[in-house]
Image (cartoon, rainbow, N blue to C red; front, side, top):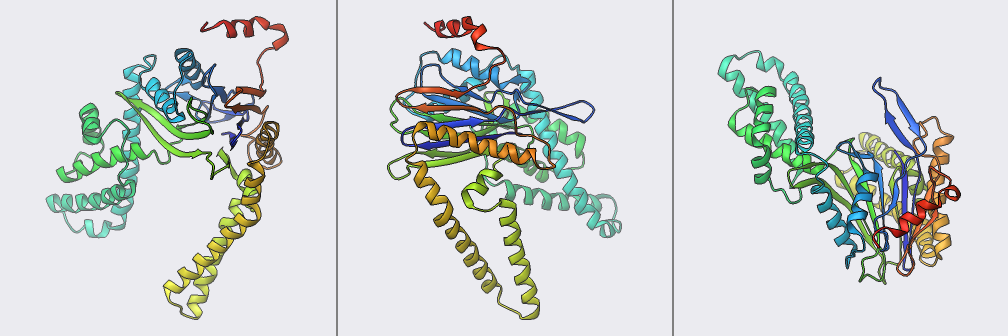
Length: 412
């Protein structure tokens, strides 16, 4: 895992990332190295930076390779808004021909198998619950009852995944690309499925892939900085979990822009519990425990002195609102007020300190040290562009001046 943060005010953006990377070994063990690069300049000439977290590869290719190839392709090009950089980067990834069509198909096939496996597990649980009733019937009647159970499972899944869609690939096009492959998998995994359930299952597969819930192999990406015509910075974070034919399995997580009315923003990514503790004045796990305990107490009271269910909900909401208001007034707002006025050097120090705080917490806890190593820090401003404050090298810069000379000559 990792810890990364973006801190913005009207004068600049600070980006910071740790260096820990976890490698899963074939025997099931894990190895942690503190040498990973996660923070990069997206352009050599424009004030835009990018960070990656979670998976360090896209279909077997390191993100560092992809990002630097995009930077080379972009050259001196520029866009008016940060959102245009995001769109261009996504298009570049989709058209990245080093990733073969076969690799893309294998990626989609893996997602389809994962969704069907999850459906099959829920179906097995429901079937087990109704086993006595199923044992009373045979043949076509039993098949109808099994398909009825499957229909209930699929309907619940379709409601859960809602209206999620894959960007640039509607359901019709997805089925056009992968319909035959999906049909073969369904025939192997659920041979007795009826026509109605088959259609629902296809929709559930599509929506589940679009939503990307519980996919451990995703990569989180954060793009921050300025478009050419933007006076204040902004940030776009998104996740990507594979490629298909002319589309990426991606979803925007959050966007944040500095304006006249929103003069500061603190955005943690990946392992963010220590930043949440710093901002809210309470550990997220403790906060959750308090809320769950309040629910438990009210339920116990209700057993002794029956109260209206709506009354209990109203009291719970009042308590939650009071906690949130207290945290905002005493912790969040005062910090953001100070951040809005911080100079560039202090923004960088704050970003580095919050990443290091997470690393220190991991160091003194029994958990694996999934955050650690040198912290890379950069400041991005409209006038100065992307400036490294702290950056690790795998070589000694003083002994390799030709590297920087060559870097500065490129694109000229």
